[in-house]
Image (cartoon, rainbow, N blue to C red; front, top):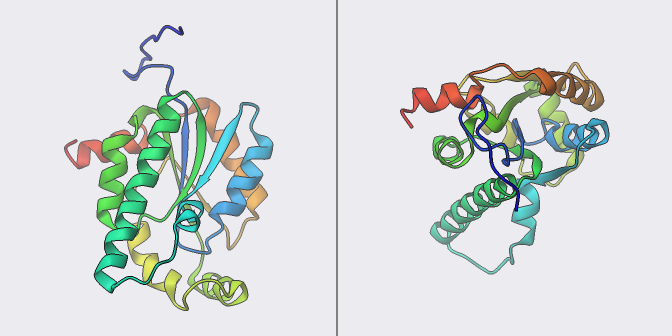
Length: 195
């Protein structure tokens, strides 16, 4: 059995690293994640929230039931990410922090010194162009999310996919990982939320 030692930041070194990509729908998070996995030397798992939504059956539900089901899906997704990291797996997560409770839930669950919070930005004009081209998102979804997704305002590293390619963004993140400063964005956000 592997022994656990304490890191300088105060947690067990068995925890995997969580590279947490936050941005609106169609901002390019999944494209960045795919490129990032090709650049990193250690094994990483890409855990996109869309994959969890895709696993769910699609029965007829009332609007209240839909809201409850979606919230339970997000909460389960957060716990799956936390479990993978607690087992020593490195993960790249793509997420949409468009509701304050989602951030609060992640702050409570994830070891804050092992999270790299990445802001994935994109211009509204480009988001709308991508949304129309994809055809698999409700019209105006990104526009509704854009003011809320980055409302917490704190990141370890940021990129803009309206001016940089997914590979450029992935390279920026990969260069940042070896020398992550402390406190991390998650540590600062936990202090702000008094967790």
